Length: 228
Image (cartoon, rainbow, N blue to C red; front, side):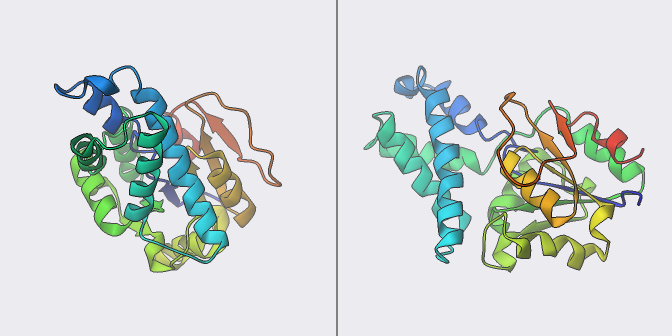
């Protein structure tokens, strides 16, 4: 069946989650971060994800902003930067202004010009996602921004993927779901979406029961995968 709807994970897929640490490290007064920002960014992202999984399994849901702060606090301590309240606040502020990857605006514009539905499906809370979409200037090429806060559990729970069908009234095999997280692409594949894993870092395939239909290095070819 032809693709009618393209749905994207937000953080790490459309928005560069390392941008906050990278930008902060380049600013005056944050010299302590200049050599460690890649490590801090990796720790921050990993703990952010791990805490969503643990909370989903334990039925202990929290707003993604709380999870994001918890992940940062762990990362700051792991890199010996705990106690720098000004740096912590700057990193959190920058997270609301994450940069989109360079190919994102043109890719989304092509999808909309081709008549496809476009949306974000994210663990992020609505205010966080609104800030990122506005900062990236991509609101006009998105039909909707769907948050797990609607169902109160993080991905890859099936109730999250259900939100796409409920919003667009489409069959599962009409959806091209795109994520930079291998586990997310795998979960969506098991759900029945056509999936693309954006493997920017060249990581190994996750050992899970399902695999993405496509593996990409960036988002440039998404319109072609969607049949345009």
